[in-house]
Image (cartoon, rainbow, N blue to C red; front, side, top):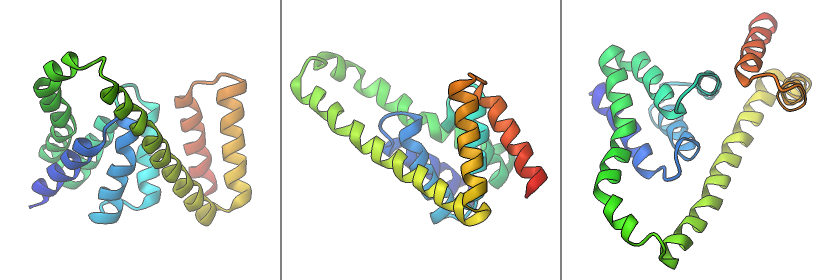
Length: 175
């Protein structure tokens, strides 16, 4: 039954997550943290951070890792397949239809409605991550890591993977 749960958790989130990886991350979080309890919020945020540090689509990396942790190699395969299957199916089925109506005002308006929804979902996820950090490590440590990460990435142009690695090392030493 675990394989069905793995498949369905990632298939349904990617079926509903219009807008790519950033749109599906809050949905994946809901499934693996709230619904199935496979990860805590802190563990999910760590998987998300590591997924962001590696090249490639984040949803497939997260699916592969979480699937492997829950169901081994078969679980990893099913999770990755379930992550890409909705896009593959819809792309094949709807490519001609979308191409035919690409200049339609309704299609353009639909895209305008989806963007704010994605922004709200990402904002909610960021708030939950900051809230969880505040509860776990305190305001001072959270601000130090947030400001330090900002300065390193935006001002000093350090690659995000190095910032994540340094932050993980800092967390391992201090917590």
